[in-house]
Image 1 (cartoon, rainbow, N blue to C red):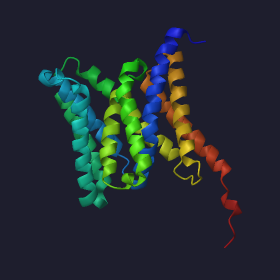
Image 2: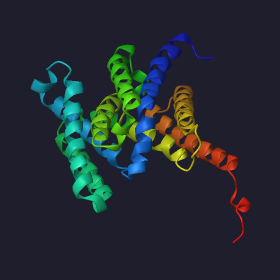
Image 3: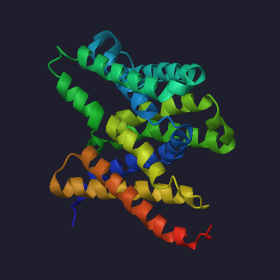
Image 4: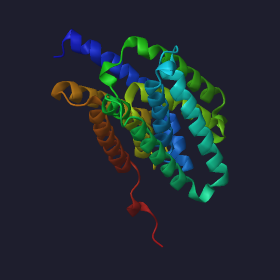
Length: 261
């Protein structure tokens, strides 16, 4: 059994995961629909770049909440660039987004090349430290996530327009701070991919199920075997997505039932 101290670590980490899932499952389905798979990696990397700029410039770092608004500014700027690409580079959009991601990643590495703590910061931004999330860190993400979900429920068509990029940038900024770039990408894509071929009315419920199972299993695995939490959750999310996709395929009608030509 887990002791009280371990439970006090796992509970805020699980709530952080649920907050990330609350918005990412919806946005991930939109990402697959638009066919812009790399957008989450690109904007997450740009947000991380903003955090790095804040870290290396002590004048900015000393400003109140710089660790929040600086990545947000970078993410919003990145979202604006991708929104422009979506209008003017339709046939090559995914390739340009991929290039945008790589350039942002290289810029981060160059900025941290001479920083004695650069490797540690870069690892934290990529893999995250979800197990060390505190309750106080969850207040702002909870408010913003509730607000974004409220906007989507009130005006669902906002996801079909340019407003999608604005909401996406805000969500990604807070998520990178909580769970890291790799887990942001996995949370967006894996639940959506698991249900991509499913057309039932409970599609969204199943997608949230994929994410919840993945996060719980990953946190327990990380705590039990002292594994990196972000990597463990990515692995269990992938396994959860695969199992759910196989299960739903077994539930669907087989091709053998189709009429002969």
